[in-house]
Length: 304
Image (tube, rainbow, N blue to C red; front, side, top):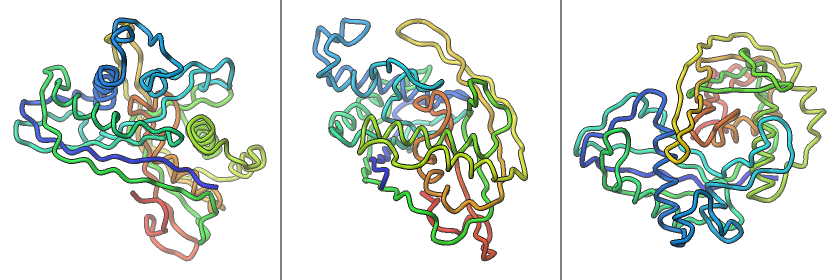
């Protein structure tokens, strides 16, 4: 059993100053991508509509406006978009003319991936302009690679884990937002997100015993928790609505019998966890140590 997807890295050269205000890189890129992608793949009648009228056949609707699920657990009532942007290093930065910059996009649609139109849209968004100053850039290079993560236990017994919450993260447990990310909550949100993406866009839901793994995850101890809250918001250019996109950032450490959970956390580094991942929220960096005494970060499988 594997989790398969595509990862892109897009490298640009700025033509104008490009401003990425704090808390906004993922939101800026997602919004610009949506406009560019719609312009490339949609018909004229679709472009004039608030929502795509050809939802069954339109790549834009399938990728950027997937239909809402009829029912589902909290946080999954809206069908997740099959992509995330990775641009945390651009947070609060201004890119100067002739300066190169990059961002990554992970695409989880593997049944019928729109690879060519996806890349074309990224090239267009840079020419159309980014950020509040609408700074333009040229696309210099694209790296595309398939990724496959096998859900097998870590071959060496993992005993401790360090998680950095890179971008604002919001997690729910029992329909309530949590301010302390206990390991069972981290694992549950990672497991559920990967399983949902795999079910909707890949090979099918995870074939595991969700309850039993959740019970074992509850035995993992948190040994460090240093978090702070970040406030941010976004305004929809199409509806004018304002949405909060804040959450906690910081670090947490965990100890226990972690080996079987490592692949799911590896996948979570690519998918993100929690609410609003397609806006760049919920990005994790994970380092694992082994019972043999290797320093944190030297156990295999959790680097990219």
